[in-house]
Length: 205
Image (tube, rainbow, N blue to C red; front, side, top):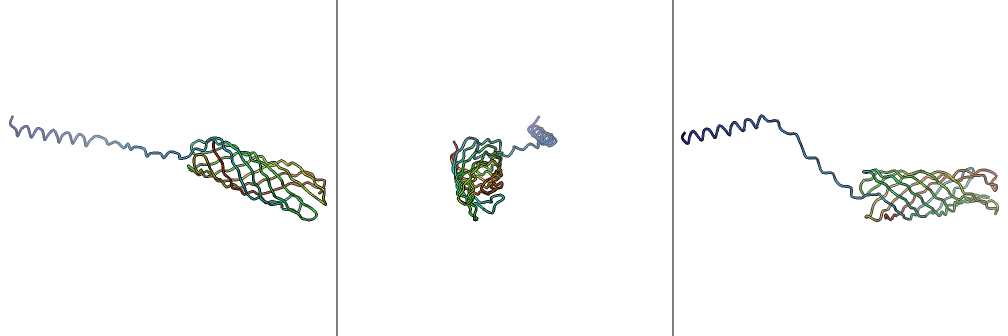
């Protein structure tokens, strides 16, 4: 067999191999796109302070107490994927008061115990919140004072942003309903329905 016969045989082998390869099914496998890792994890305990403004109205009375309110909060978050849920409690000192002669009503302090459910966009968290509310309401008529500790409920929403691994800042709105209680000085049942807009910072342990 001469060299031309060898060359012809080699060429035929190459052509045959290419034809067989062309007939094989092609794979449709594509590597999955990389998943971006979460930048911030909200799980864990935290504590902080807040400051805001409270405004509302006394039920069955013409007064509309309002004023600056501030306090402290503590809580705990759990995170599953991008869903964040937790519990928070806070205690507020309030300057909310109003006088409409001969009545004066004020809300020296109040607190809440709430659940929180939210969705995290990495360092940004949006959430809804609601639960128990309690607080002191004081009524004054012609120099006679009477105060009661009221129970009620609260609901609201907020957003929080992680400044770094330890600190976050938030803005939050709450509607707080302190249910009616009987007051001798007014001769009727009074309570307080109020709105609270506040800003705060938290330290995450």
